[in-house]
Length: 216
Ligand SMILES: Nc1nc2c(ncn2[C@@H]2O[C@H](COP(=O)(O)OP(=O)(O)O)[C@@H](O)[C@H]2O)c(=O)[nH]1
Ligand SMILES: [Mg+2]
Figure 1 (tube, rainbow, N blue to C red):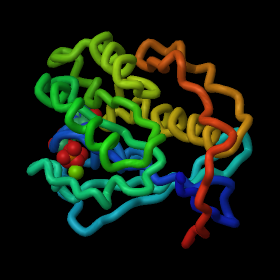
Figure 2: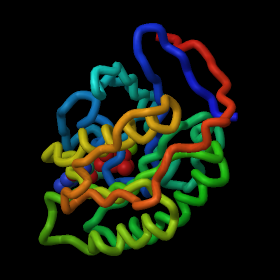
Figure 3: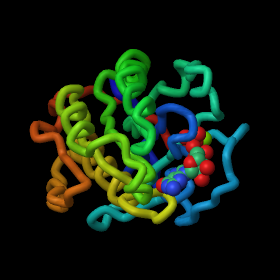
Figure 4: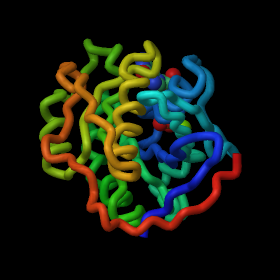
């Protein structure tokens, strides 16, 4: 059964995790989303579990609890507990570093192995401000997204705050559809840097949810 946190001050509360090789910009992506800021010098976030931002989706208050690794990905030793009860995963690579893209199957496997059965995941190609250094075509990310059942492939820049809001909003909308019933699908997906998996659809109505209160 999926875990659904219940909060009486928000309509939804979702746990989102970021994974991917080190230095792809996970911490910066989270920081860009939660504070709108980019800093070249905030690297390791030892001791920080998660940050929270509440966004408005069609008048609903959606609390996004975004979890960052504490650098364990350097040794590929992300613990099982990091994945536990995550609703969504943003699996991130650096589009200027091909090997970080080639690591994606490893990180997808982690989500599939340790996450809940129905975790929604998106592929994030970060650092799209560095176009001249690109080593990964967006088409390749789309192909991988399609093959692996990712909700979407997106290219972001934490530095320029490009597509960051969109990435989290896309995730939030899909989770609302899955956990909360009828919310119309995002129609902004014709943006060239957002590829929405064509057969993404709400999970079965009969899904059993374990409900827990939110601690906010
Ligand atoms: N040009 C550029 N650099 C970025 C971007 N995001 C992160 N970086 C840089 O990439 C490095 C790694 O970022 P960090 O968030 O610590 O990566 P993490 O190990 O995946 O958490 C840092 O030097 C950041 O300043 C981006 O969108 N564009
Ligand atoms: Mg980090």
